Length: 473
Image 1 (cartoon, rainbow, N blue to C red):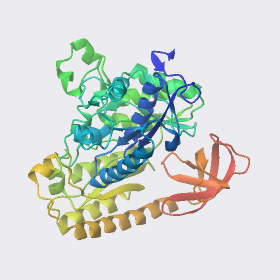
Image 2 (image 1 turned 135 degrees about the horizontal axis):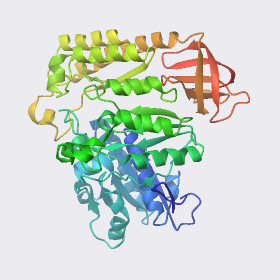
Image 3 (image 1 turned 180 degrees about the vertical axis):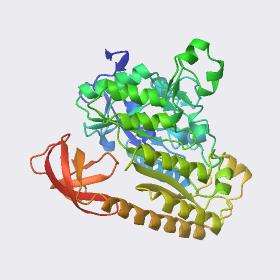
């Protein structure tokens, strides 16, 4: 191992000579993919070499999502696939990590679907769990931790383009939205030591990375006062309170420490985003002018049932403030169609809110009841599936209209783009993202992966800007 400003970095698992190979398959949110990189670092220290080929692996770990029923169904299908593989290759071990592991716990072992189960706070225990598997003992750990943030571990960058990386800053969530399993699967909210966050960003910069995304279930709730759950901050010493660091301060610290690195963050919560964050974004050119601001519904009645701690009007005021402080800022959303008891009037409120904001992008879903949540226990999932689908299609159509409008605003303008990879649709084109998080494609020419390129936009689709490079940025 090597250390950089307190950050413990595993030896390169690809280069390390190891007896066993590890394949990690991640699903769901960016946090899960980031966690997969933490797991690779932990197991790299006990002799596992990461591989991108599942058919050569000795250990397959599925890093899972429980946010929607469809996600769990997809993972069940993958487990059935690996169960069939194990019949041909008895040496293969299969484990489930993450939110689905936490939710189902030992049931997966009882079903003989997997060899081990580890929740989001139990990844340091994986070496012991693997030993238990070899000994024929139960291998499950889904215990929650009030302090675990994997703070000093430098993740192994899996499937990396060498340009962009995720950096986790918080774990867990305290918001208790009635539809969401995250507080139950990932535990209480706690923040990572800012020194380790900055150290990880510096290591990435030294390794040639050009962009980081600061990650958390709710980044605006970041609060470092020496460690521990955010809810215990009220019991902290006066000195700890006086020296505590919030998200705006952390964002500024990272921006100042690596001033040539581009910085993004996700996800924000409307009830917690402060004007201080917006002011920091405006003050630093290396902080991208894009905000993912989930709203879930435009109806105050539905927001109350969801236990979202804001109203349609307060959300609009926040949008106005963003527009005032960060003109042209890209704003994206999450929206749920067909939540419990949603009426046509509630649905129209959502469409009206969309028309007010005119989001750049969005993630839209039909409501899926999740076992154990307050909504599943107390509210009837009474909107017919056909109605959910119809309302979802209306939301998607409205978002497509707004996205197209937002893309057309950029026609004729020059966009600064960080080259992130080859376009999926054309081998002769690069793709990257601008500060608003819009995808930009342009002919490769002599430009290289990781270059900053100025691109003049000449055409667009609702999801992509199309142009030609006018020179290195």
